[in-house]
Every structure is written in C-alpha cells, then in structure tokens.
Length: 263
Ligand SMILES: [Zn+2]
Image 1 (spheres, rainbow, N blue to C red):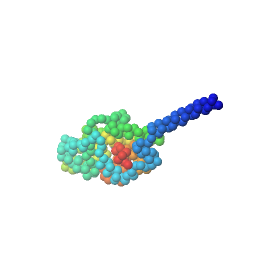
Image 2 (spheres, rainbow, N blue to C red; image 1 turned 30 degrees about the vertical axis):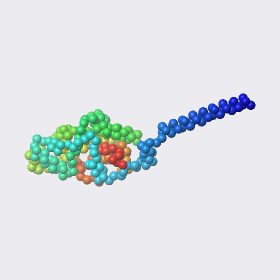
Image 3 (cartoon, helix red, strand yellow; image 1 turned 90 degrees about the horizontal axis):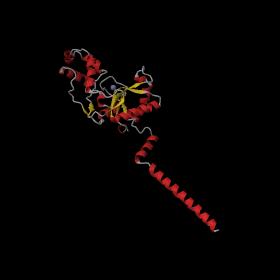
Image 4 (spheres, helix red, strand yellow; image 1 turned 90 degrees about the vertical axis):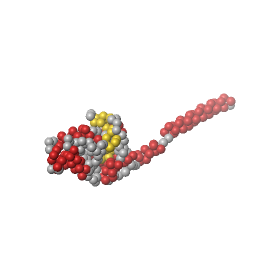
C-alpha cells in the first residue's frame, strides 16, 4: 500500500510538472505572439486588402501635389535653361500654361542604386524592389527606364530636344509650336517629377514592344484602382481623370508617396 502510494505520488508529481511545464510554455508563447496594435492592423489588412482608399484621377493629382516628399526642397525658380533669359521666360510661360509645376529636389544625396544607373531616394528604394518582387511572383517583369534625374541632366536633355531653334524666335514666341512639341515629352529643368528621387518610369519586360498602357504590366499595376502599386506605396503620375500636368500623360510613370498617404 505504501509502495502504491509512493508510485501514485511520483506519478502525480510528474503529471503536475508536465501540466506546469505546458502551462508555462503556452503563457510564454502567448506573450511572445500576443498581437501588438501594429499586428492587429496587419490582421485587419489581410481580411480587407482594400484598406486603401479608392482615388479619382483628380484625387491622385491633389495627393501628388500636396505630399511632403521627405528629404526634398523646392528648386530655385531661376534654373537657367538657355543662354537667353527672354527665351527661358517664354519656355517657362508655355510650360506653366500646360500644367508643368516647379518641383523639389533632394536635400542630401542619399540615394540607393536599385538598378544599374537608376537612383532612388532611400525611402523609395525598398518599396520599388518589393513591388518588383511581388510582380515577379505574379509573372510580371518590371524594370526601370528612368528614376532620379537632376535639373542639370534635365537641362542637357531639354536643350538637346530644342535642337538649334534660334533663341530669338523662342523669345519672340515665333517658335511656340516647336517648343510645345518638345514639352509634349520632356520637362524643362526644375519642372521634372524625376527631380525628387521618388519617381520611376517603368518598362514591361514581358511585352516590351507593346505600348505600356496595353501591356500586362500596366494591367497588373492599375487593376482595382492601382491596388498592387498602392500596396507598396506607389501611385500613378498621370491617372485617367487628372488635369493638365505638363507633358502628354505618361502611363508608365509612378511616384512613391508611402502607404499611409494612400489609406
Ligand atoms: Zn517619367
């Protein structure tokens, strides 16, 4: 009887230790994985992938223009273009009438090279790489054809497009049509969205010979009010319904504003 009692006691102690051990384990587990407020947000987002706001073209445009791009400051309005101040004034006048706006440029040169010769501000680098990675998972191959561009580089491109237009005829307005043809596709220095370091031009490597807006990449980026782009903090530069913004609308251009601004 005594032996049995001892056995009973031993069994009880072992059982008790197992119970205490398991309880401790579960308490510890619970503590480690207890959802913080951030985690519960993530859980909500998984249930509602549309935690993002639906934007009209005008709303995207307003967000683009009101967003405070980190580490940037407004560019000096007097960035020279040609050697002729009167010609510069005429070019600016034509550009403003088309909706071009003076843009901002990085305060510090803290860029990340996300692809050969393609620089982005640090905050936009990972969101771009993550967007690209997610696209790849869905069979969509994105690459960049442009990212950050300085006002100096823009000036070189713009002057190259102006070719040998006489500066006097630009200044007098006689060359307005030719200047506008250039402004259809090229911004004047100081007025390019690429100056911020948060703007990208995307190419579709799945069907490179197709117009971007007809590509499966555009379809993937723009479906459900651009949900795939928004998921990584990107918005279209020229969505349908936006007003005159300078160049002929460029459906391949996207801008990072972060996910918070899009919710
Ligand atoms: Zn662009």
